[in-house]
Image 1: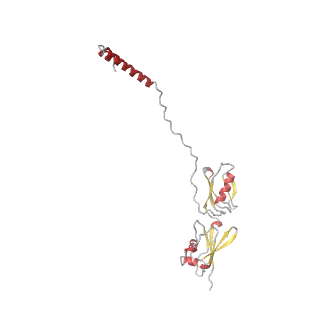
Image 2: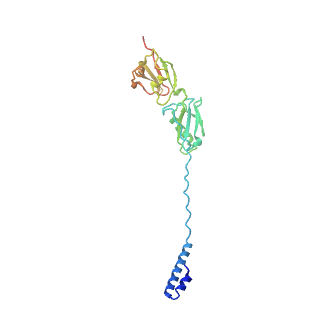
Image 3: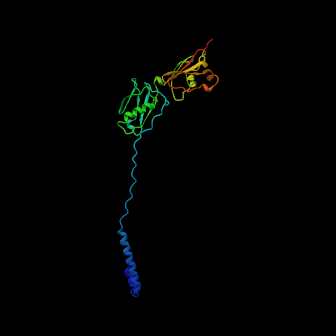
Length: 230
């Protein structure tokens, strides 16, 4: 606003000139107060969230929880949130494994969960509250096999896998032989240090489709198919 022009035009009107001057002073005071206000602080970026490295997910297990580890197996020792300590190692002929910070740990004769707890106890001296999974990635030991002997097409040992059944095993060896007494077959299983005999009617299963006979197998089982009596 040009105050001089306002005052000149209002020179013959004293009241109008006073009003114009008051408006001008109010504008100047308001602008000065606004200029003296502190600048708003710049927006701060959100703090970064620090996430502990967890590494790749654990490998897929090839066996069940009751599997007994043996020489020749390959196991992954997976340490949660410590990828630098996670390794995949073979079970040596002496029955032991070695991992970072844990040397010469006996693995043979243990289930994966039992071995994991044993490794945790030793690793706990170096790592706070370690959480460990032991995964059998390659079951190669004799403990991981199932044997089929007697009157079958090709008596042999086959590799155990999770969910293996009697029918799977019989088909894997070519079926029953011509002189097989299939209904007198049995599965020999070691439980608690004692030999257990489980009768299974293989002829009823293979030829008659009696699926009640298709029992699940365990590592180390031996299927015995006797010869028929003439």
